[in-house]
Length: 125
Image (cartoon, rainbow, N blue to C red; front, side):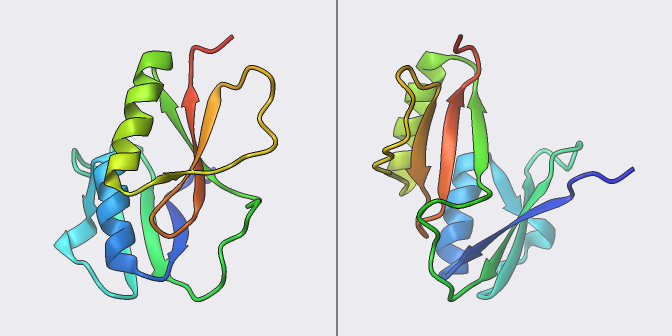
């Protein structure tokens, strides 16, 4: 059976993206190596089944409505709010999202490269 080993995200500035995602997820460069065109980040506590996050140089534009994105789960609404604030402090930005449902369990953000991701309140009804 297959499992997800690495999620790959495109970035124009791989080092900047690595700083953001490393800080966001508590990941570190695999083998301690940070390149200008490719880096693989892994959990600082070791792999333990969590997928790596690879960042590769890309010159293609960011999709406004990406077909694939990351959902980051928060334990509850308070943690979601705190994590959104922390991520914005790391360089993320809020995305105007016209498709929010009436009572959303998610907040749409963009990383330092403009890639969209969501922060989910895992306890939301």
